[in-house]
Length: 516
Image (cartoon, rainbow, N blue to C red):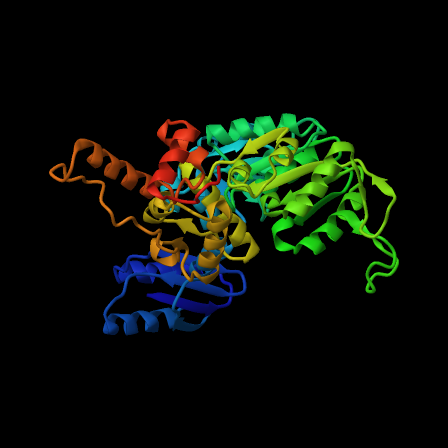
């Protein structure tokens, strides 16, 4: 039960109230005194008759003006408000005692550490956070706040660290710890001594093959020769291409991109090479093409494998000496651009089936990078998922969301045919519709990956051993081909040569039929 006693100030008033409680053997749980003339009491529930007698005795105390029951104590309401504010605040907040142990931590910080708030209480801060040494800073008992970079989980934040000083029993100031308040959005990386951030820092990975690829890309970024980046849709080819441009010598010059597969032949040619005056009525003075507009910079050709044969021939001529003619003009135009081409799958597959010129392929394939699909970098699925969840929570201005253990397993086991782009779009849709603070498998809408109904079990009673081996081989290749649609990828997976796999796919009628 809780009482609010309205009174005027008098020496010994509180003592009179406590004496009544003691005489009635009521266990006092809490007492608060408000300077404006109110005293608040908290004690266990008592019988109604006993309660009436208690109220009567308190009202007879001199200077007491009124007594009434209340639903909560002032500090209880303040505590609830404080917890509500912390739990909904998207910024990570941690309160530390003077020895660097966690006293209070909000949901945003606990989610980043992938633990419950109660489990984190009492933990040493240096065991949880990286970057700035908070333990050493607390040992100095500072009086002024500081700002530094803190790593919470896998994210870097710029954090304000505020020291807490309170007065002790003698009225002297005593150091009581600090409050750590992070900015709302994570930083890409902690700046080094030069303050520069690598353009490749946005490539999130813990997979060895991607780390090697990034190192190769950093070296290739400095070379002014064509670069071919191959990989399935959604693996991040354009992300790598833009990073190569930003890390290269042309970073201050234009970076222009065109999707070769999204434009008709005549439009694609005019977009790339431009046209002269009077050729088209809607632009009578003529127009510069992408190559002229990007002179000195980089041109990105997306879906280069979808180019028509005619456009391929003109691009090949341009690569020989860096000159071309605008549509409707006779004079040659010379430009200096670096060409970066993106191809879905492997471009050599288009060469094999006769849809892409072999001589152009070798012109474009001076330097090359092959991005593996997400299903081959399982360790990166959860790393990217956590990044996207954090990103979208900030974007949607909602409290941090946690991935449940079953949700992590579900994401990790899915084959992701759309790769990183599919993972990003799926999580955005799920988070924007989520009404809880934990993401479960039921909240994620993913299409079922088609299963191969044919079993790998082979009945040896039917036919010869050679027939059984062929049936097993055919079934295995049919099962693997949807996940490895390139013969080179499938060959690497099975440890066979590209030619051997291509022949087997042709013999069993699997995939595209290649021209020879």
